[in-house]
Length: 132
Image (cartoon, rainbow, N blue to C red; front, side, top):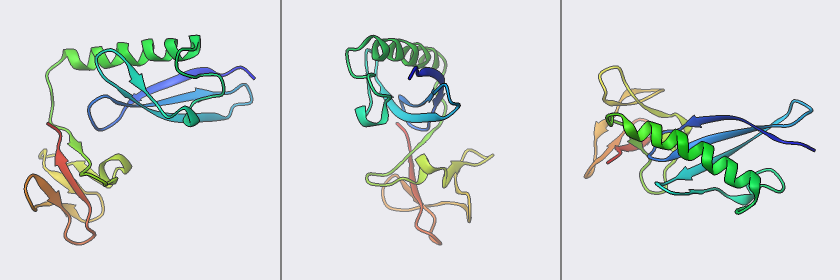
């Protein structure tokens, strides 16, 4: 079954991308890829069969992701949030930057400064910090 790269989307967090693959039957598969200046990493189980490290497909994927990564790195850095160690709130979209560029819980509003550089929703426990 032929698989094609369909879309690459930047995610919250430095160098993190969502990659969507499309199958001939219309179904799709998504993987999260981490990029640095020269390479990408992804869990092989999340990639289509045959898209293993070193394969022509993987190298083409790396080239595409790295091109987007370099383009994003060329402009000025903007404030972004990242998950605290062991957390998922930013990646899942539970915590976002509000219109005033302050961290906010999507369910309960602005987060409060907690311990260190962590911001927290004291109603549900969602946490984030500014990426840096």
